[in-house]
Length: 175
Image (tube, rainbow, N blue to C red; front, top):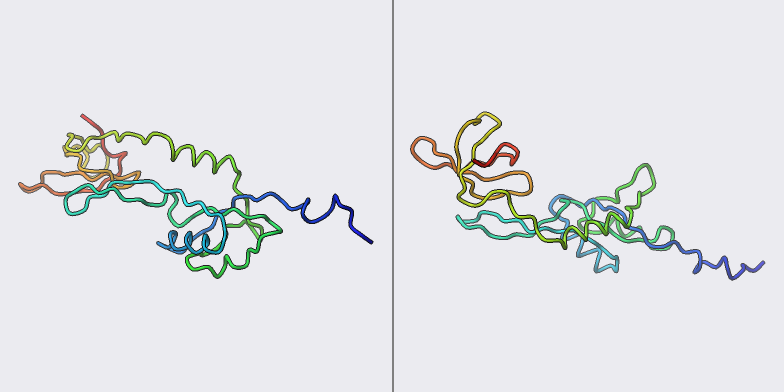
């Protein structure tokens, strides 16, 4: 019995969807490169952060979601087996036995936010701030740099010298 033209595999192939891949620690870039070399469409959102190096602020690119990236696959068409043995890849994120697709609107929103104007930092380098939470509550400090999205580097006077200190950004307020 012949299959009808409307039920041919080419017309019933599912549309590609995004899935989440967990990478091995500090190997997201390696996984992204190896998956791309195998012909997979991969998306690893990155942001630029400033890091203090040798007393200077240096821009550095890091993953928005450390140890994760997105891969575009067709559920029953693409070969998923090479994913498991790809260098840098730990696993495809799944619930039970089925990988859960990530909605295209989520990926589009991530792209939109990454392309938008960068948010200006709430603190300026050299600005006087106050520590309002934690064991150093009430101390005055000088803002030095942002350390990632949720921590800041401060300078405080202790024992007649300036000491660097990293605290959560929520623990600091402007004067």
